[in-house]
Length: 599
Image (cartoon, rainbow, N blue to C red):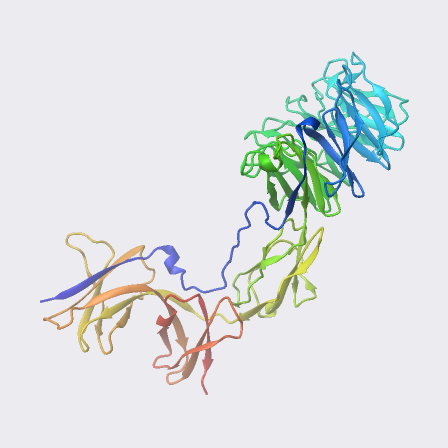
C-alpha cells in the first residue's frame, strides 16, 4: 500500500522576502502622546472667591502677572507670594495684558464699552488711557492683546465701527493720540478677535469671520492706517482664525479654531500673502479648537487647544515651523487645568492658565522642558552593497528642536535632520561610524555610535524546505499540487532516500505560486509511517567556482556587532555552480553571508 503525508504551504509574497536579508528598514513610531519627561505642575488652584483666571500671563524675571475676574494678580514662578495688585471694581474685568519694563498695559471691559489702561507692576499708578464710546467711529469691548512700538499702543476691537464689524486703533502710552486706523466692512474682514503683531511700520492681524469667503482673514495694515491688504481669505476647510499671529522674519504663523473637521489647524503664511502652508490639522485625539496665540522659539511653535485630547479638555502641543514633527506635551484634564489658554515661555518653562482644578475655579500651571534623551540609539548593522540602510533614534523627551547626523564623528551629513537617517544604494565607502546630535531649548545629547559595514552581495533566494520523517533507508516520493480538487492533480517534486531522518527536500520552483500543498508517500508497509512538515523558508545560497574548490561560508546577523562573523560550513564544489541550503537560519534573525575561498 502507499502511505502518504500532506502539508499545505501558504506561499505569500512576504515569505519570498523573508530571507532576502538585505539591510532592511527598522521603523520606530513616535506617537503624538504626552511625554513623561516633561514636568507639568499646578502652581495655583484658584479659590472661588478669586473667580476663574482668563486671558494671558506675562512674565518678568521670576514674577508672573495675570488676570482673574475684575483683578490683576502677581505671583512668583514657583507659585508662591500670590497677591492681587489691582481691582477693577464690580462692573469691570481685565481681558489682556502686555508688559514693558515695570509697566503693564491692558484692555478691560469697564463700563459699557471698555478701556485701555496702564498700571505699574507694584499695583500703583493706574491710568485710564482710553475709554471707548462705540458708535460709528470707534469700536468697543477690546478683549484682545495690545502691541507696543515706541510710545504707541496698537489694538483691535471686535465690535463697533461704522458697520459694526470692529476696528483697528492706536493710542499713545500717555493716553493721547487715539485714532481709529481701520473700520472693518465685512467683505474685508469682520470681528478681529485677536491682537496684532508688528514688523517695522506694518501691523499684521486676523479677523475671526468675514472676508470674501466669510470665514475670516489674515491682513496687514500700516501704522498710519494706510495700505490695508487681505493676505489670506479663509474658506470652509480652514476657518475662523481666533488668535494673534506669531512672526519670524517674513513668515507669519497662526491657528484657525475650526475647519471641515471642526478641530482646527496650524498654518504659516508669508508676509506678502504667498506660501500658505498647512502645518498641522488636529484630529481631536491630539487636540481641537486652538484659540490662543502660538509661542515661537527657534524652529519650534508651542500652543494650546481648547478641547480634544485624551480627556476632552484640550492639549498643550509643539510643532516645528516646517510641520515635520508634532507632539502633544500635555493632555489636559479638568482637575489639572482644562481648556488651557495662551502660553508664555520663560527660559525653558511654559506658563499658562486653565479652567477646572481641584477647587473648580481654574489653575495657573507650568510645563518645564528638559534636555533630550536617547531611549534607543541607532543600531550597528551590516549591509550588502547597493542596499538601503536605516538608522533610527528613539528619543525619550519632546520637544526636540533639531537632529543632525554625522559620519565618522566629524562629517556632517547634509539634509539629515530628523530621527530617521536613510542611506540608499550604499557603497563600501559608506562603511564607518554614524551618530546623531539631538538638541532642544535645554541642551544637546549625542547618541552612542552605530557601526555600518558594507559587504559584497551574495546571491541567494528563499525556498520552501520540506522536512521528511520515515524509516532509515526508505525511499519517499515527494509530490505537490497548487490546488486541492477531486481528484487532486499531484505532481512529482523529488524522490528522497532517507539516510539520516529528519531530512530536507527543497522546492526550487521559480517563481513560487501563492500557495502549494505537499505530500510524501512510499510503497509497501513501512515500520515508521512517513510524515512531513514545513518549518519555513530556507535561504538557498549560490556557490560558484571550479570543481574541487573549497569555499568557507560565513554568516552574520544584520543588526548587531559588525565583526561577529560565524563560520557556517566549508564546502567542496562538485559543480561550477551549486546551491547551499542554510537550514540553521530557520527561526533566527535575518542573516547576511560571505564566501571565503579556502587555500
